[in-house]
Length: 197
Ligand code: FE
Ligand code: FE
Image 1 (tube, rainbow, N blue to C red):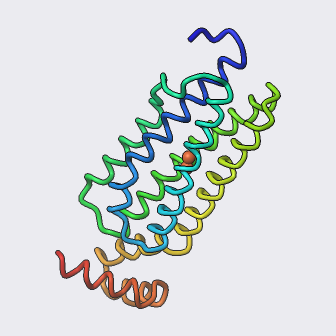
Image 2: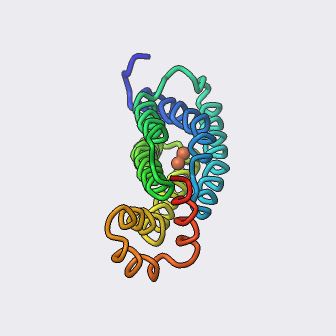
């Protein structure tokens, strides 16, 4: 497609996002399966449902523009997902893997936030008010997901991943500072993880 106008660039951006969302939906089951933290699982389930709505919003926009949604492959998302899959292939402790999965997921959300922010701004300039509303809804969901992921990382997953590190080192230090901070649930998980080794 010849990029001879802002509208042409807008359509390109929308196709890129459409491809990105499809790739995310395809990649999610495997990533979701690798997660151990309950809160993180729940956040992913919520966001997968949101992602399905986001695809439908894009389809409504394409229909309104009278152009097909397909025709572009998002290489950026392909790369981010390839990195996430690489992580899943590593020999990692459960909590450390969860922390890594959050980092990967946040890279995906930030990529989407950049893309939807651009698309929303173009639609506004081009006077597609209905599109602007739909794209803003999606943008809000991506930002909220990013915020929730930060919270899960900061309040539990990163701390539990840090405790894994303590285990490898000085046992006395690990018992003294780790148990009080992470609570019974994490201690149980750690015992289970130890048995595996
Ligand atoms: Fe999305
Ligand atoms: Fe997202």
